[in-house]
Length: 157
Image (cartoon, rainbow, N blue to C red):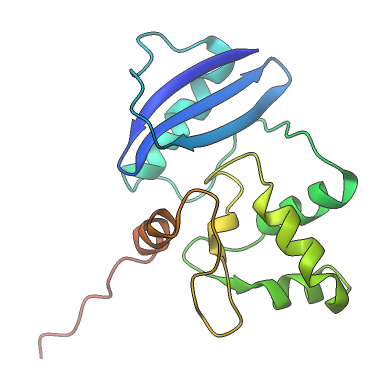
């Protein structure tokens, strides 16, 4: 398994993967030295993440290979369908997946998402619009959502 560390505006990001795809993207609370060389298997993911954080990318195309249960993968695939700059409640996500009673299971799978930012679990919010639990910290969730929804230019006249 190859590893790379990159700096982002919200902390150092660890990326792991191999020729089958990226298996983990995680933000760290501790400062870690940025990788001087990026393994070939991770180069596309690193480039796309850097483009995302610089405001030049709204979706990811690198190969992803997260490890999880069938249900978790179903939830993570549904997260990929939430458009850039939009949010969805846990309740809406459970309904979309066909079972309103699965809201807790959906929330649990969301919280176990191993591909930070690329699989946009940060776009899932409470039914009342509140920023609810986020493994990377609510301040990061807020930053990511603000990053994806730049202010609208007001008319001057």
